[in-house]
Every structure is written in structure tokens, then in C-alpha cells.
Amino acid sequence: MKTVSIKKGKILFKSVSYSCESIFDYMEKDPSSKCKTNKMIWLSENEERARSYGDDIKYFTVVKELTLLDFIGDDCNYDFSSSLTYETIDSELRGKMSSILKLIGGNSKLLYQSQLLYSLLTGNNFSVGMQLETLKSILDTINENQKGDYEFVFDDETVRQMKVTPDGKSFKMVLDEYIKLGEELDSDKKKLKNQRLSIYVFDQILLKLICLNEGLDGVDNDIHGWYIPHDSKYSTVWTEIVNGETVSDMSEIALFNASEKILVEEDSNRKESTIIKCDTEYRASLKKKRERNQKKF
View 1 (cartoon, one colour):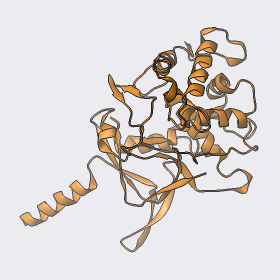
View 2 (cartoon, rainbow, N blue to C red; view 1 turned 90 degrees about the vertical axis):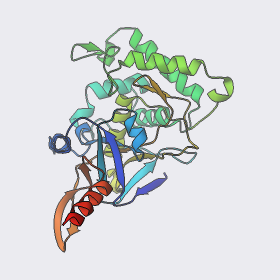
View 3 (cartoon, rainbow, N blue to C red; view 1 turned 45 degrees about the vertical axis):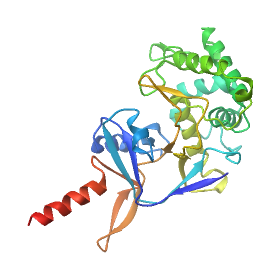
View 4 (cartoon, helix red, strand yellow; view 1 turned 90 degrees about the horizontal axis):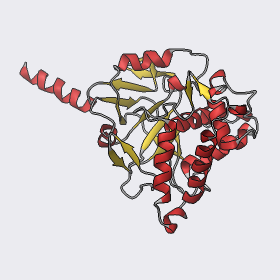
């Protein structure tokens, strides 16, 4: 396992129409589990990358140094504990999420399902060809249109129809797009490993599984999520189509328990704060604005 640190004070970006207050109000719901999806957030180190999803940008300041899993590279392996079982998970993972996991790992143990999902999405120990065959197998399963043990209807939608991306693409549409892309790759590219593949609903489940895994067996790495750098040297063959544009920059910071409270020193006093803070303007811009106003007087 390889980790990276995001330093206190770093500014991160997200395109989102909701106000800062409503984002954290939503995170505060159901405080019983730090691993619930409402406490997750995806951020970017690069404002341009964030703007690929829209121009309503929020600026997040890191209040506490964050330890994140390095999600890219030959040594990005992550081991799930044998103590991670369907008996030790929270209620959210049961039902829809566990049924989706069965698309990948069948009726195997949660440990195996988790490891397989990790390999599919990171390309760790998985070639592009293996990722492609897994996607085809998932599509074949949902095309069979049989409920069986999978319970393939949720909220009056089949798994094929279920919206699985922030821009509302159906599961089948995302699978079709990736399979078409994968089949057009040449043999050399199909041999590549460590190629990030992102399907939002799978990303949510994996982030949740990592959160649930942390702290098991008495081990606490103080991990808060994963990290993919904004690096021109790294791109993935599994490009995304976002708002009609092809995006190969998969850089991101994915956090769980983003509403965690800590005590911080401020003006010689200790006060409670979340580990990230949200603003509608870049703090550097705010500082310059205050300096300009002071000069007027």
C-alpha cells in the first residue's frame, strides 16, 4: 500500500451547483456511519479539470493534512481484510450495492468481491484486456434480464436503466461506451496495466468498502480516500465522455467521511472544524479583495 499526503491549506476544486452550506448539511444527515455515501466528495487539484463538469466552481481548503491511497502505479495494491464481511458492513451496502457487487464477483465472499472491484477500477494486477472482458461479462449478465439472486430492479428501474453517473447516463450506456472503446484498442494497449477505469456507482461502492475496511483488525492508517495526481505524464486508455467532450485526465481526490470534525487552533483559540472547508471564491482572491478594500481607507 502506497499513500500520499495532501497538505493543510491546499485548495481543491469542484463543479457543483449546491451551496457550500447545503453540501455540508447533506453530509451531516445520518451521523451513525462515517462511511455513508452522503459523506463522500470528489475534488480536483486542477480547476480546469473541475470545470470539465461545469462552471459553478466551489473552492475547498484542506484544514487537516489528509492521508490518501495512491491509486496509480505498479505498487498501488490495497489489501482488504478477511474481517470485511456482510455481517460487519453498514445497512447502506446491503441491497442495491451488494447486488451490484454480485455483477462482478457473483456470490463469493465480500473480501473477494472488494479485491476484484479494486482491480477493475485501478488496473492493479489487471490488464486492459481483463478489464474489457469483465465489462462484457457484466453486460451479458444484465442483458439476461433475470432477477434471480441479483434482484435486478431498484426503485422501479432495472439495473440496465439505473443512472450511474453524475450526468445521468444509464448503466447500460456506460458499459456500451467503454466496451466499444476497449474493442477498438490495439493489442499492445490491451496488454497495459494500471489503467484507471471510472464508473461512478462502482467508485462509490469501492470508496465505501475502503472506508469500512479501515480500522478492521485493530489497524488504523488514518486514510481518508484515494488520490490520482494531475500529471501530464499520466493518462488512461479508458477515456470518459463528459458533456460531449473526451476526457483522459482522470486526476481526482476522493474523500470519505469528509464532514469529520476536528479541533483547530485559530486566533489562540481552539474551535471545531470539518477537515475541509468550502468557499464560493478562491481564498487568494478573497485576500486580495480585502487588501484592496483596506487601501481605499
